[in-house]
Image (cartoon, rainbow over the protein chains, first blue to last red):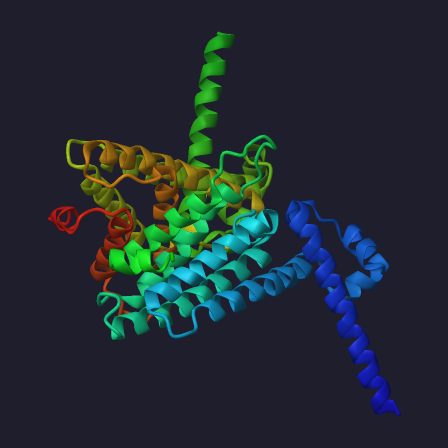
Length: 213
Length: 213
């Protein structure tokens, strides 16, 4: 019986933890990390503030976990988009396009994850996840080189340049704007970023164009 | 007399402020922001800790000022390298090369400025300065398009992609490494990053090669 109770307790704790992280992520998606108070996370999750602090010792630790969970989700999407039988340049284009489109659909959360000035504990997570993205891109670039779809190059170096180019060029489009700013043509911006990245890799124009189809 | 004393006092205060910032920057260049204690900055500057706090109300404010001063210096170098009579792609290549070479010559300071997880007050400065770099690149890209040395493109978007690509691809080479890691061929890495960036802009191979001379 003791064993069964432990399992039950563990399951309940895991469910509460997920609820707290989901509530916090939703609040970050509304206004960024800096606007989120622990009391609001507790209220939204239907728990006492003291309970929240039992799960996450500090706001920084909660935010680091929010960052991990939200970014892990994006990494999985990118990883999936990089699989398949298409050429490496096309898979890279698909993955970068998906990344950009998902970011622009949820701009406040994406801005918080990519660019918002945050506590060092959260910022450290950024370095880890940027390396994760780079590793995924690197593997695909190597496949492209091996298949002759990309010219020989330092795949490690190119992959980090890709991560930097896509993240940095999205910061402007994602940044909070005056409500009347509707000048942004998202599809054109995404297309331009993808062209920069694919050209940077030395993908032939044919590969770049083909992949937009 | 009162006026003259005020001038003298102002000059002395400005000299002390510069000394404090220079000492702090040197300490950051040895081990990054996180290792630097206010007491060490005061000691190195030959002032009492209390005096240091009179000039900078907090460590975060001191670091934000260190960041500004050190980055302003790099921005001036880039700005200068972007001037002249050469083609825009060549000037961009020169500027990016100078940026990368200066970073790799002083890797700990460059890593602190570009990538080290820092307080939000310092991280906010990063966003400002990345926008400064992007503006400089954007102007040169526009000149390149006008002169027919670069294909038509969204210069604003390309400029941020450039900033991201160069910064992110330097993080790995700059990051603290085991002492016995001497596998990094800096010249090759820089050349690769520059090729990615120039290709990303759609500069012709001729322009890319010519500019390495």
